[in-house]
Length: 517
Image (cartoon, rainbow, N blue to C red):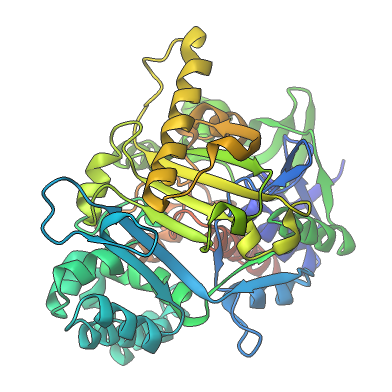
């Protein structure tokens, strides 16, 4: 009977990175995936003559042609070949004016707004643009980026407790940053409130607003976007998944698709194998799991085998946000539609806490509109374009929707999101829709197998954010031969974060195997 060195459960981004890391190191590796393709969210789907990107808005950390970023560097280490398309902007934030807003003005699109901010790449450029929009914000913005630059020097030490004391000595600001929220940090730097609102636009990528999220992690994220811009694979995110699939196979790893893990086999209090599709048993020495801990403990383990600490951890954490995405294949080009930006955040209020309050309801008026053709001009047939609109919310927003009402409900949500974008950007979308697909939380739950369909794992809050999760990582793992990776781990949601946690978990297994443990 073959016993694999490592069995990886789930071929999402984290699982792919873990399996590639182990296979590259010469370990006998088996990657199991219940779907028939790799990637999880990092895939694509076709409707009519359009191939859609399911979830990747943009990828920070790709870097520039002159300076390789952390994501491209990881793919280079693994040997994954990806054709990167880069983009030299960050975001546009548009806040339509409400009746009585004293600071309202008409923007270039002819819309009455209180905020319209197109933010560029580069720390200096970003700070000067912010100062143009909110005079007096330049110095505080540059101070924030200076902190983030120094913070990154300590990041490489976070996974090694032996190095942490040295990193804290070299960069003492790291402890001050992690002990304060984003709002507290920006207040301490003297950043004006309106500038903070613009500066905090990416809060939704973390799933927590400025009063809840720690300053350290937000600066990490914003730093990655602003330093060198963003990127996306030419053939969408599935190109990344297929590239790593190829790496695993070329290095002797096995990948079994249509192979759902339905049970973890235990012996003497630790995992020793898995059951696939309720029938076939496969055995291994180590396990890396890219699935939601909630689902793992509910579905794969007998109650008596679940460590008590894992139940306490799940009960103490909140499920992060869920998403609704409307995919649109348009029979007009982006220029004909009047779209000039890749990523536009449309918010009912500029304050991140008020935005967070708004998205507790479904639909709130908070929406992100992306046009993939802005980065990849040939991603659709000539004379066409594709848009995807994304909104977020929290909790079981579908609990009161009856099955017979589902189609009507999702159609209304899509209509509301489309009209929000049309009004905020003064464009016409509806008459030119050739293909439409609507993904609500149940859609994501079906494909991702996560609680409520969240792709974000658990909410990152000040007490339970990146640094404490990183320091506690080994103690938080359930068994000495079973490690989680993906959005539920220290860096939360995001492609780059998932790859990082997968490579890290794989590296731990490689180290333990080499040490003979």
